[in-house]
Image (tube, rainbow, N blue to C red; front, side):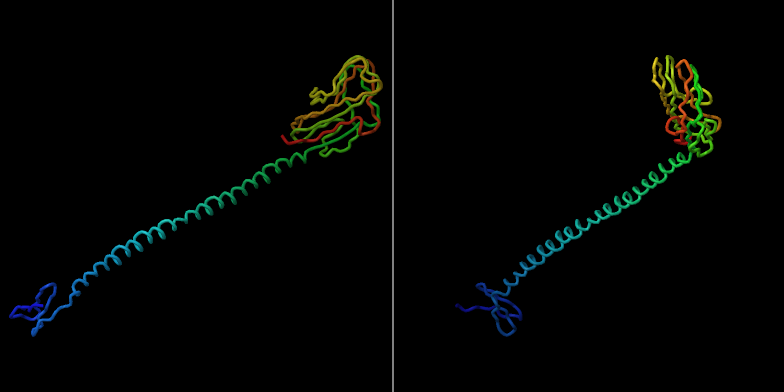
Length: 260
């Protein structure tokens, strides 16, 4: 290697470069400096870019952390408020219980009660024969009472003292041969024909006896209205009401169905 002509005079820390090598004057002599010291230091740039710059801030803090944990999962609380509080509580417990009470206990059962406490009666003809002449309506006698819950039956007449609707029923059997002419049974209200039951005519209704029936729903004002049973026969002669002191042949009964 040829001789190196260092600068002279030289001051401490002066440097001299030749052929890619550098010397430094220490005040007494020139010292060769390490060849890799300067270039190796620049590797630090790679470290700061790889570790700190991109991977750290983008991977951990930027997208994954904030979007995964805080963004969507937390909003599941919406399910709780709709399922438990919104529908089940108010509609299941309060709504259904209220409806059952008002309809079952107050609505129907209460109103039916008064009909069961209204007047009712039943009577039938005794063994005294009653004659029915031919050609006109005549009152039938039912002299024997079976029951009269409100003392509204007397003299074969029903006079209910509770206003409302009543079911009245009667059957009358007559003895004898029926000739030409009309026969019938009717409910009279306040002395006038009100509801007609069996009604027919002919030369021969029956050879020895025949029965007629009437049944109807009637209204009574609870004070002045009264009801009686009348029959008519057209045999041309007198016949008698079958009266054998038996409640199953000639009878008259009725009962309150509901109040006014």
